[in-house]
Image 1 (cartoon, rainbow, N blue to C red):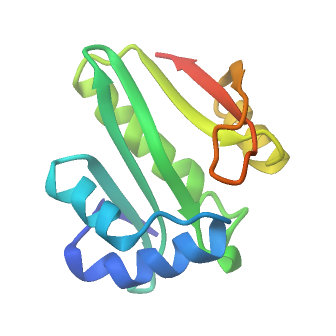
Image 2: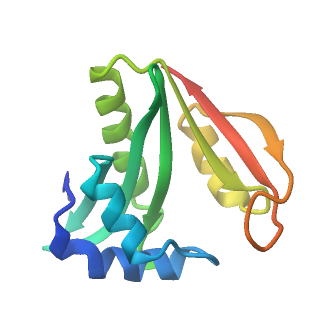
Length: 143
């Protein structure tokens, strides 16, 4: 497995993973826009196929934000997500970021458990954060 920078030709595969992973997937135009404006955008690749991705950026001077993380269902529980998050953490540290935040659906217990295993803690809840009315849990990791 390798983790590398996203390339525009990866977008179709990233969208397949996005669509299988989320009830309300981001539109491809938004993902391309995030790439175009310089957000961190990495992919995990296995046997020349993109199997996961992470999008992140520095939201405030010293606060990083994970926008999206997803791994193809067939490749989950094989450390792809962990490697992607660690690569983002490494990038944040190079830029002097000392805290990382993200939002996750409150009902997504698997994702919450995953982020906790990486040292994130639940900070608070945002009611009706998602379009369908689901609450979000804000998670935070101090670096």
